[in-house]
Length: 455
Image (tube, rainbow, N blue to C red; front, side):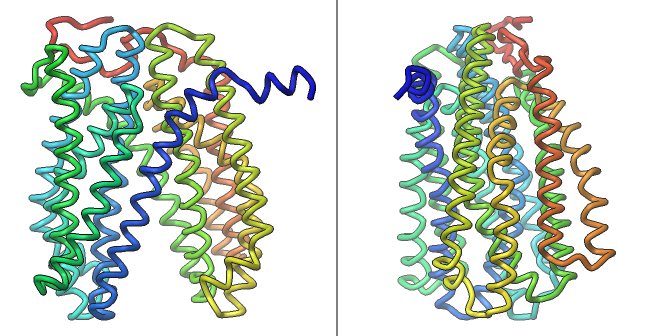
């Protein structure tokens, strides 16, 4: 083995990347597993209840996706302050994020309880499904304060370079969710309402555990726990661009699903499986993005541009390698896993062709996810918002062309690949420009609860 190859395999940034990414991956994977458990428990109640869980769960998941910026923005803020050597300011920024999450969560809960019938009715379900879905949604939204606190608390710990504690808390909460669901649904005979209450109680327990960890850190370092309007306002201001970024991603996904629906039932079935696979692999790549948020924020806070560049290059290499491996496994293992999803030969054949397409883009997706995390960690949310809008504008004509020319599902996935390429171009241009390499504590949302504001 040559010395150059040995150096490539022993990069000094690898231990740090893996220390953050591996636990983050575990926490990310835990969520879909608990959702599967929920489906299995409710599914034995009957078809209307399972359909209702699907509708209400879609609404709750949409809200969760939109407000994930609470984790991202808090991670960047805390990591930057930590890198600047001010742990007190880092924790203070995290406290501001927790108060913002609590306020938003209470508002969402109140609005959700009132709007649940209209939200479910928009899907035009049967009367039985609508009744169950409204019941589940009205209870489920009561867990929004806990869920958003979980996002912010996780962001605080990630910013402090700790992804292991959120993993243990998430694992415990998801395990409790399964036990409580079985107890409430079957032991107490509460039906689908029991499933909703079990999830809310488990979410609340996880949120309390995270908040306790953060509060203990705040007390150790003499940080006030009182709400600070200036800090909360800055946290919200930093999160808005990331919300816009998320909305553009969700819009692209919704457009893709709409076009697949118009192609036909066979195409929609194949698309559902393909998108599920894509989402699952995205979780693995997102673990590298989370590591990027924490590492880049800390390096830039410490004014270490060279370290930031080196760590970014290494994470890109990890992203490409992971994408290549995922793509190869997807293609080679198709005969093994495709029959597990469907017995329909037409769906199987179409799915096999679609997987070939999106496997091609997996290495590019690895770069996209990493650079997305890097720029979030750098506090470059405004650019990500504009880039998201531009890439959505670029994608819409491609999707429209597929729909207008009856291009079919394979063509639709090529168009979605074009969306990923557009994201790659905007992110790489930004990374090459160096405009995101703003050092010191000022680029993040800085708390002023200590009576000072570092500029």
